[in-house]
Length: 221
Length: 121
Image 1 (cartoon, rainbow over the protein chains, first blue to last red):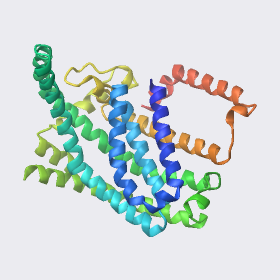
Image 2 (image 1 turned 60 degrees about the vertical axis):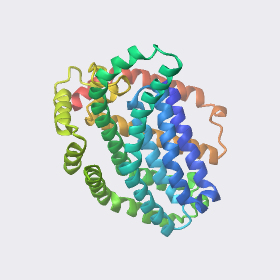
Image 3 (image 1 turned 30 degrees about the horizontal axis):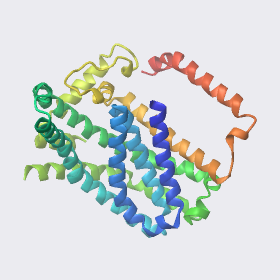
Image 4 (image 1 turned 180 degrees about the vertical axis):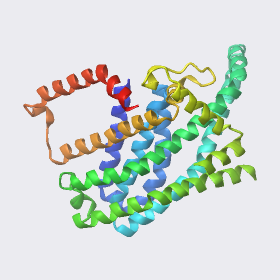
C-alpha cells in the first residue's frame, strides 16, 4: 500500500513537471497555480481515504509544494516567475485564511448531514453510531485540528527550506533535464532564480507568522 | 512561530503550547530510540492521525518528511532524465544486479539502522 502511495505521489509530480514543459503552461501559468489548489486538495483527500494515515500524506504536501516552486521556473520570463511567486503567496494566504477552515468545517458538517439523510432513508441504523461519535467528537476534533494545522505548516516550511537544494540539484543536472531548451532559461541565468529562492527564505517565514496573526484577527472579529 | 501558536490558541481555544509541551515530554520520554516504533495508543486522536501524533512533530518527524519528500523529487528528476534521454533502464544489462544490490542494502538497513540512530540521538 505504501509503495502504491509513493508511486501515486511520483506520478503526480512527474505529470506536473511534464505539464510545465509544455507551451500551454507558459501561457497559463497563473491559471495553473489557481487550479493547483483544488487539484492538491482532491488528491490529498483521495490518498487519505485510501491510506487512512495522515503521516503518509504529509510528504506528499511537501513534495507537491516543492514541485510547484520548481515548475514556476517554466514561466515565460523572470518577471513572470516573480509575479507567479507573489500570486502563489497570495493563494497561500487565501488558502490558510479561508479555504482550509472552510474545508475543515465541511468535513465536520457533511458527515452529519449524510448521517441524517441515511437516518431518514433507513431509520434506526445510524443512531447507535451517532451516540458513540458525539461523545468522542469534541476531544477528537480539537487534537485533529491541531495536528492538521501543524502538519500543513510543517510541510510548507520544509518545502521552503528544501527548494533551494532542489534547484541546486537541477542546476547540476541542467543538461540532462534539458532546462535550457524546455524552460528557455540560459544556464548562466539559473543563478538568479537560485538567489531569489534563497533571498525569500527568511521573508517567507515572516509572512507565515503574519498569516497566522491575520488568521487570529479574522476569527476574532 | 510563537506568534502563530499564541494567536491560534487564542482564536480556536486549542491549547497548542500545552500540546507541544506534552509532545516534547512524550518524545523525550520515549521507550524506543525510533519513536514511530512505539505506536500511538491515545484514543483522543483519530485512527488516521495516530502515526502523525506519535511522531510528536519532533526532529525525527522532520527528518522523515525531508527524506520522503526529497526522495520523491529526486525520483521524479531521475525518471524525467530517463524520459528525456529515451533511456530504457530495463534494457540495461546492469539493471538486475543493481536492483538486487539496492534491495539487499534496503533489507540490511532496516535491521541495522537502530544502532546509528541511537548513537545520533
